[in-house]
Length: 128
Image: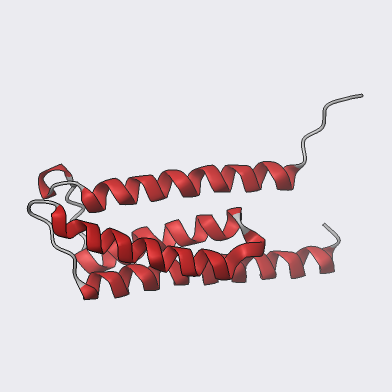
């Protein structure tokens, strides 16, 4: 029997791997001392928002049938990360950061869902 790759399964697996790597990077950057964080030159809240949009989007692509669960878990993880910062010298957890990060996760999930709907509608009309 010949070996064949299921493109959808490969893309889902890849999205899951990237999602977990992005979450690991976000966790490291959130909980590391300020001296270990790169300076991007972007305003802090915008930087957080953009980072968590990517995290949310990749989890949405990787776990398509579990978007509500991903939103709730994402919000809980963001809350945990902000709380854990209290124990890191030079770091502080802030409600404003929590709100921006959680909003970023949810926007990423929503953007990915919208892109998937558009792609599905296009493929149905064009018979991809």
